[in-house]
Structures are given as structure tokens and as C-alpha cells.
Length: 381
Image 1: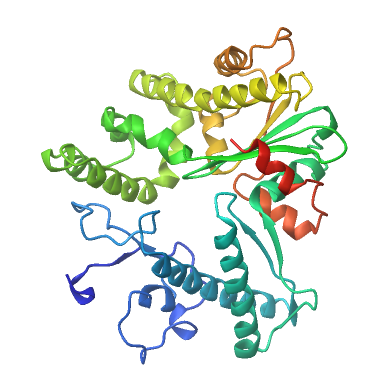
Image 2 (image 1 turned 135 degrees about the horizontal axis):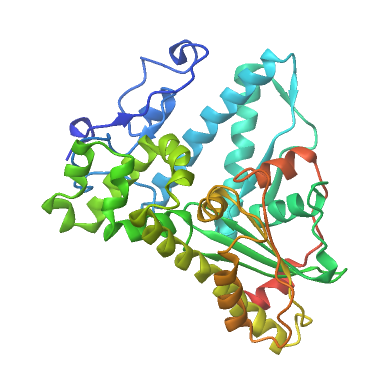
């Protein structure tokens, strides 16, 4: 199927201070797969309210062509840098200090590619916009390290790393986990688990679509429960993603009020069970590290950030605290996996800025917490 025959859909901006056409659109560009990005629009895979088979969608996944993925990344970063430049010019700035974080799941080669692409984009942005960049060049940090810096340096949190802590960032597609203890080479383990917020929220909906009736109209539900989608999980999750994005604000507003509803209660139990799996995984890692003498046996505080951390608030009727009832489940599965004799202390701390932990650390220009990456590879799970 040719590129011109494909359908593209774009979410309208909820807040537009100035027309994007004034800055981003170049009508002399030839038609390419990058046109939606270069035109300043946000590409979205499918329009809510219409059936989708997911057969003709170009998505950035592990199976995608590598060169194509980097073209998409480059186009996105170019647009982002131009937008940032416009923002700082409005504030009177003439020089930008660029800071980037990258996913822990990137390979060494991919990290180098990301750094080279970002550095090249910054140079190009400076020549096009006239905005200078700091002499030190861009700062790059692993998202795991940056998130750990947020929890450690935030004056309202101050994680005590020497005693032993676990930092977990629950993103959309992956959950990044790091375990720290001691004063020297504090980082003991870092790992990325391909199980995160989207999996936790969406997988139960394959069987419990009735839960979405609180947020979606009849036409959306008719499409989502159609025989066509029931036979095609890929198409179902593609359509579901479109609906969730379209009704995200309504969901966040209504979820806490559904605590006593029977259907919502069943769905919430499934979500709690899925999240408890992350605590079980952490317990397994600690059990292995303790048995190997790498981690001194003690119960660590667990700090959770990322967009997926908001789910814990929903499980606690909108306001999670260390005394929330769902902690009993998390505690039980954690100790079942850890197999530690003392089970008195169990502390979970949620981020004050979900999904922005790395950005806060980079903006604060905090020094990186000490760690030895070469030593890390010996204990990578």
C-alpha cells in the first residue's frame, strides 16, 4: 500500500497559544512518512470512534526497521528543540543548556546513536534559530540514574540510599528498577521490565470491556466489542489505545468516584494484582542479591515514579498513603518473594511529580549518583 493511500489522524491541541502553521509547516516539502512531524502535528495511530484493523499502521516497535525508527526520533527531537527555543526566546533567553535522558533499555550502540543525533540537532537548531547552546555541550543521563537523583535530592523526599532503597519508574511500556545500597558504588542492579502501565491497565480490559462504559459512548463501545476486534487482539488494543487517549481526562476525573461500584471494584482488583507482580519481581531480585552477598539483608524503602505510579492513587480511592489497604497485598507478595525473616518495616513512597522525575533531576543539575556501570553488568537481571 502506497504512503498516499494511508490515513493519518491527529489529536487537536487542547491549548494552542499561536497557530502552528506560522512556525512549522513547509508546504514545499515532498510527501514523506515524516510529514506529520515536520508539520508540527502530533501523530496518533487511529481516530477514536472508528473501527481499526491495525494492519496498515506504522508503529515504532522492536520489529520496526532501525533506520526508520531513528528517522522518527530525529524528526521528533528537531521539532521539540524548535518548540523549546521558541519558549525560551519568549522569556528573553539567548543561550540554552540542553539536557537529555535516555531509556535504560537502549543498547550501548543505540545510546551512542541517540547522543550523536541529539548533538547534531542542537547544532542545526542553533544555526537555524540563532539561539546559542552552553559550551559544555548537552548533558546525557540514563533515565534510571536521573530518576534516582530526583528521589535522592528532592528536599521533600530525601531517599536514604546508604540503608538500601529501590527506585522503580513505571512507564507506559517498561518499568525501570534500580537497587542501591552503601556509600561507594551505590548502584547494585538496574533492570528494565517490559511490563508497565499500559499492560497493567489494558490487559484486564480484554475480558472486562464493561468497565469502559463509564467513560465511552455507545458508538465507541459498539466498535470495541465488535466481533472483528474480538478475533484480533492487536486491533483491539490499537482501538483501546485510541479510546483511552481520547477519554484520558474524563477517566482521571471519574476513577476515584467509582470505588464502591461492583464492576469498578472487580477491575481494580485485577489492576492491583498486576501491580503486585512488580513487587514480587523486586522481591525476587533482592532475594538473589542477598543470597549472593551483594545486598546486605534489610527491607528497603521502595520509591515509585513514572506515569504508572498514578494507578496506586486510584487503587486507594484517589489518595494513596502508606496506610492504604492495598499495601497489604503489595507487602504479602513482596515478602513471599524476598523470603526475609524480619517483616516489620515496609515503606512505599510515590513521586510528587509523576513522569517528570528525570526532567526535574536534569533541570536541577544534580551531580550523578555514584555507580560503576562495568561492575553493574555482572548483576544485570
